[in-house]
Image (tube, helix red, strand yellow):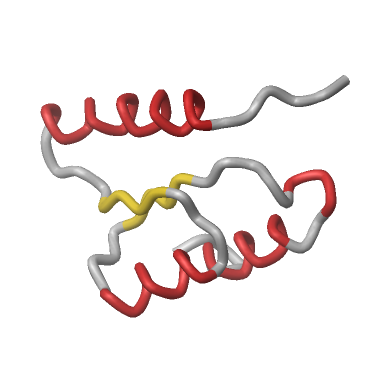
Length: 77
């Protein structure tokens, strides 16, 4: 539900751009569609999280971001 482009279009662009091809991606969406989940997985998203309705669920976003960061390989200079 982004203006002008879908999240999947943005993810496709990221994965086909040298600078961001390996960037960790967490999809934060209002969609609970199985096809959306599958498509973003195919495009290379590491996590898919449905937007929370309450505070306790919202806190989980931080946990997911921390997991993604821990999984990343150190970049070579």
